[in-house]
Each structure stands twice: as C-alpha cells, then as structure tokens.
Length: 193
Image (cartoon, rainbow, N blue to C red; front, top):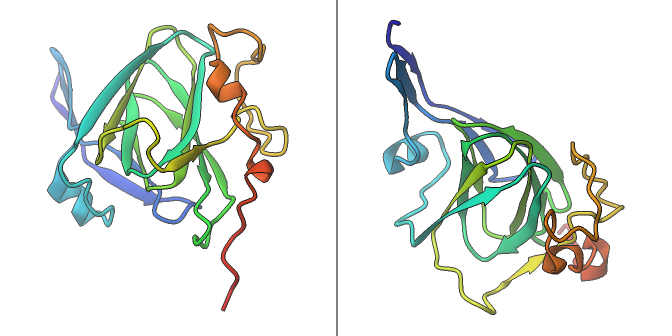
C-alpha cells in the first residue's frame, strides 16, 4: 500500500467561531497517524489558539449514549478517536451574532470541532466503544461559569440518529436530562445597536 497523505482542511460553520477541522493524516500499510493538535496550524487556518491545553479527557460510550449539551467557560477541541458520533453544538452566547444557532456534525476519526467558550457541546455515540476526545484550555472545576441545556429539548429538536428513552440512565445522565430547556434559561441576544 502506498503512503497516503490527507492534508489539514478547515471550514467555518453557521456558528461564529466554531470550526470543523479535518486533521492531517498519513496512512500506510501499518495504519494511520493523525495530528490531534498543532498550535501553529490551528492559528494558520484562523482558529486562533487553544493556548496550553490544561485538561484532556477521553470518554468511552456505548451506542446511543448522549452526553451534553454543556457550555462551560472554556474553549474545547473535540473529536472521536475511535468510532463515530453525532455532534451537536448550540450557540448560547448572548452577545454572539449567531446566538441560538444549532449545528450538527458527523464525527469520525480525523474530524474535529473547535468549540468556542459558551457554545454548548454534546454528542450521541453511533458505535459501541466510541472514544470521544476533549482538549480544554482550562481545567474543569465544580461551579465554574457556564451552562447546561437539555439535549432532548423539544424546541431544539436535535435530530439524534438513534432514538433514546429519557429514563434509561445507561444512555443519558440524570444531570443532562434534568437540565433546563434552552428557552427556560432566559437568555436573549444582545440588542442590535
């Protein structure tokens, strides 16, 4: 098998500051090497910088599991290491021109999403053993600024690919299903001057 190189590609989205990144990948008969993070490249494609990653988490989730929607006061670079996931992103930043915009992204190894502070991040695992990777520019701490939104909010109508029983705690946490619906948060975009 000849060596195949997939170059980094970045594209903006309908949410201000949220970018989808296809990482640089080199594949040969031994397998694949993917760049997870390179500061200079992220800056070059207009994504800014994560600065120093302060925390990195890896979750393992069974097929159908939903985690999120969480919008902490930190920038996140997220993606899957193994498997596939259906990512959901909601702009909950009151001052943002894209406030209230919801975007979904099919995530597979090599696809990442740069999630700005205050944009809610959530996902549904589409495969058993889905490994979802989070790189944070700040350490998570109890009580840190941010918000959570119910990922099953009927007004958001997120098209989760796998139907879910909201009472099944093996697929969604009590914390996530009990989070307020987006409208209940009482957020409003800043008035246009």
